[in-house]
Length: 158
Image (cartoon, rainbow, N blue to C red; front, side, top):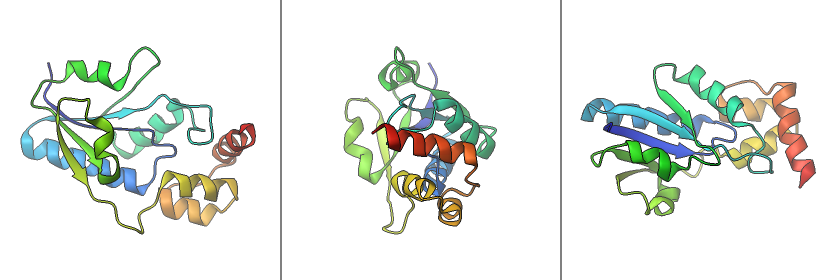
């Protein structure tokens, strides 16, 4: 079993706040001599989850090429994935999510969130409105037509 520092999220879409969280995972892993891991939710197909897991993982792997990035699946939940992590593993979560993972038996490190931090909800709204500058300010990458279409299409399905 691996001793890791990990985080789990929808990352829909990945934004600068997620990037800071993953940097915290990497730093905590370095200090504790553990492996950094990012677990990406496979959830898709609704307004909160417009992007397929492949898109999210591609962005995260571009940002962090040396970090293990895996996805959950319908038959592979976060609980199932973490069965491979030893009891000394650490979970890094946003302060607003720390109570969501009480069922996982790991030490939790909460990362505080400022009031001005970007959110996936705000990034999706900017994308849907076609506000490329706001989207890039929140995410750090360009809003392509393909990405915007996926977000808009999910909003229309609602």
